[in-house]
Image (cartoon, rainbow, N blue to C red; front, top):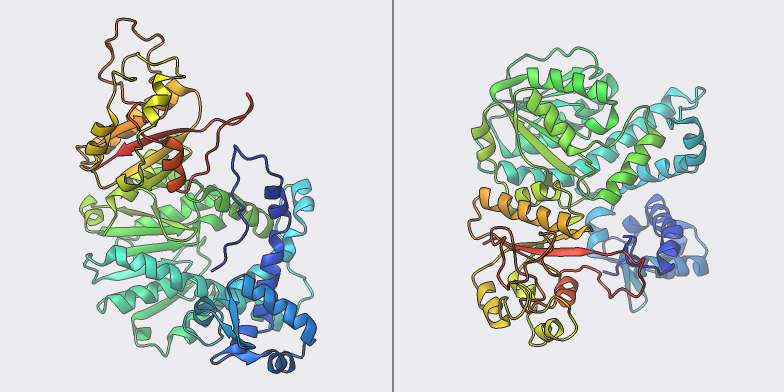
Length: 517
């Protein structure tokens, strides 16, 4: 599949093409919106269509359609062979109406929101962004829009559920679920399909509950669902200290801080003694660029909605007597926080220990924490020459010749299978102290072989001893370059943009490698 233009900023980059990519990003979304709105992908299913057939079906000009189809081909959504246009695997799975994983309603809901983004400047002027519905809009039209919203949320949460359920594969669930602000109940439905003894209670607005009843009523699990029509900010008719799992999915971001604290009070009050609370949402700590724009989207399109830091939410749960997980990223743009009254319940979850550690280390203040395998760490034969010739630190403690020889570094890397790249920024001493904190955190997490190397010479002490022997061996760590590691090539292998600096005001990136096990 063709990649979209890079929209991720590089602090070392000065190429104006990044600005051009930002300015034209809407080209891609508009092509997708139009194709879904015209139901083009459904028309191509299952065996494809020639240009003439498709133009007649869609009532479109052939020349214009041909250019449009070329754009869709370049975007990786369709392909063309011998004059016949076909859906790609991605489009077949997600963009053909009637397919189980159809995402079209969610995409068209995004299109509706895009129109409100045109008012961003006005929203910034008045300090509020909610676009009120037309007071003269007919109830029938309001309901139609409301149902589209429900279908859109249903589309999105089905895919999220496939990532969430495996975390509970070793958990015994046989009680009841309370799904607060449930929408159509797709996440609860996924749990009911996986756990045959579980029942679910959905809580949401009356019109949402009517829609959920119709959607779930014919399903095998439908008899195990009950519905509480209510504004979730009002009192619920839900039993206290009763539910084995309480779900708040895409709820936290919709409300102001004071409202969220009230919701958390009510949600935790409904937890059974061995109960867990699952919160799924955007968080600033995960995918910061996407989360920042999601926060702006909420500013434009809701009364009080915003993205919250995961740390704040974790602290709220801890204050209510719960033990919490670290932030659990999904393979998309959202993440989870799970809390429990009984810490043992969290130990039953199928959590990746390294992901948990990466999340904790990232919170220390690193710009990025990325996984790295020892095979990606490049140790050629020339690096130590740059230390010996051209570096003023040569001969100092922990610099050549008082450092790891490249042969020793290669041998050491054979004893490890996993590690992290830690990216930070000046000042050097502060960065290196953070690296030591990260190494210590890894050791406490059970990685007894945890060992850090950083780029550049050691700067922990205000002045380095002149006697040739380090007086701070407890905290000193090897330099990557002094150990023979090609930092530039290693970072490139890890997908990190890194270049030599030509000017004094260029942005400086600091790196370290934390080997784990």
